[in-house]
Amino acid sequence: MHTEHPPRAHRGRRVAGITTAIIVALGAGYVAACAAIPLPAPTLQLEVPATQVIAVDDAPLQEAVDGYDEPSAVGWLDGGTVWSNDEAAHPLASITKLVTVLVGQEAEPLEPGEDGPSYTWTEADTDLQAALEEIDGIVFPIPEGTKVTRKQMLTLALVPSANDFATAYAHSIFGDNDAFVAAAADWAERNGLESLVVNEPSGMDDGNVASAADIVRLAGLALSDPVVSEIVSMQRATLPWGIGEVENTNPLLGSMGGAIGVKTGHTDVAGYNLAAAATGSYADRELTRIAVVLGRETEEERARDARALLNRLADAPERLAVTSAGEYLGTLSSVDGQFVELSADETVDQVLVPGEELTRTIDPSGESITLSGPDGASVVPVYREGSFTDPTLRWRLTHPRELFFR
Image (cartoon, rainbow, N blue to C red; front, side, top):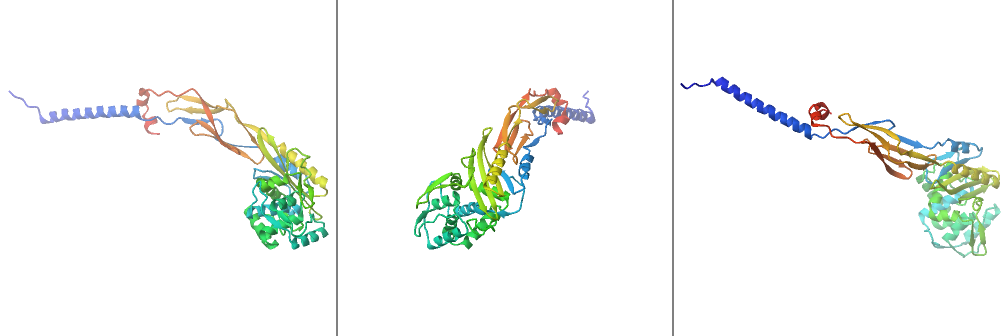
């Protein structure tokens, strides 16, 4: 006799088979997913700051300028920080000539090695020489009609500090005093010299003023112009027209190692002024330092004080170990509990001066240290003590939270 199964029992076995197949399929998928999913990135735990700013103490430089009663300031050619004991504007005297030449250089630049265009000495120039002589200005009389190159005018203006040639130079470019004054005011504003006021190009007007700090910045601009920096560093120069050899008015040139200029100034109102600069190598880094002294009572005093401030600047650079080989940084921990210790792989020294900063940043992955400072950016590798091994499949299968819910 043929017996048929009840329809419900047949359906139950079929459902059970499908369910089993689904479970098997899901299980296989879970295993495959656990095996294939990328592991989370290791966790970085640092024992030192992730970012550090390294700097040199600048208090000694402020103390150095504060040690003088008269206006004094110091700074570095390649640095933005200036230390000053007096923010008021004071008469520039012949330091004005740096402004005159830089404004003229911007309008009609003289290139290194060139003599530039010739200028014919006029009756107005000879009249100006006579007027300047009456008020004790520095002049080098030459006949009307004499041809003078631009390089010769700049040399006479900056080396022996000739008032007549500085004025003739400005007028040869701008036409008259009003045009020069307008150009100088615009130039000062664009260069951030907020205290600078110039009424004429020679420095004989005591209304030509600036703060000691702005004169440090002015000296830096002068030293950044290759033509001007070459001329102000000359101890002497030989000129035609019976003038012969002229001496630089800067007393530090030839008497102080590394001295490279920049400019003296003197009137009865201003006193004795000096913007001075010197170069030197400090732990294999070439640096140019600038000192400004204003209102001194004698030539000897301005030379002494400028020299002392330049020497104080020479003591300021410091060689710092910004990373040290073997320096412990922290650990990296893997998702399954493994860890490796991290340390700097190299020793790196850098020379810093007051006013500069170096930023040291450890990469979030723990692979490197980036150093960003005055010499640019560099990368120091991080050494790992050991390495991670892949977790077992069993661990992956039994830790879904760590793998899928991170």
